[in-house]
Image 1: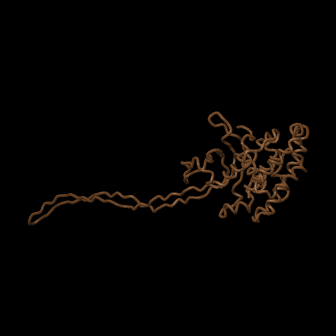
Image 2 (image 1 turned 90 degrees about the horizontal axis):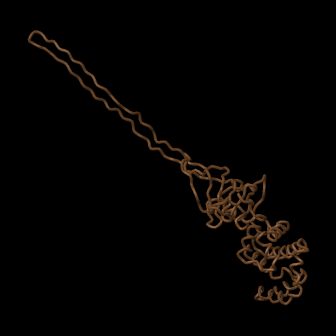
Length: 309
């Protein structure tokens, strides 16, 4: 579903600076064409006269252009969603959500230069930005300053987990400077679950060890006998102990994250490996933590928009 929506957003840029009514006309003409993109390009090029002053139009009336573009965006996305067989997408994609997606996309700092220069947005850029906007608007909500997964969407991905245990402090997200540069790592405070292992301490049998000894003398004749005897010794032992089982468990708390947007790995400060806490888990793939997945989807595509740490 996302891929189709990204495709339509890419198409918009081919007709972005033609007036809205003309753009709609081109769209309708090309709707049934086998090569939709090629058709739009042909009609767009034939209307160069209408788009000559696009730079001035954007400069003089950016808000008007933004509104017109969002109108086209809204219409196309809504049509695609109506045609979708995904009932969850239909349920979550309200009109307000679609409007917010389009506004988010057009306002993104990576998209603005293409609007200003009347250029087509590269697929790689469009896909990342659109996925970020749709993740934010369709699949999440904010509560008390934290961003949470939408419950219904979360359960389709993690049916055995509780969405309330995974969130991001929205005000904590920043670019992180690593090896003297920005643009690859983000830092944030996130809530998650961390499973740690227990330990089995083997039992030990008890024992006792004794050393008995003795000595003496005796004098005996036919009429009389005399003697003495003494005994002594010592014992040493150790009490046994039973097997001891220290169970593992799950921590549910906030951690300080570092996330690599290129390698898709993350590190959480203080995530213990075992019950003693002496060993930490270190860097892992984001797939091991729903909170890391959420952060990647929301922020990595727009990392340049984040404040620097």
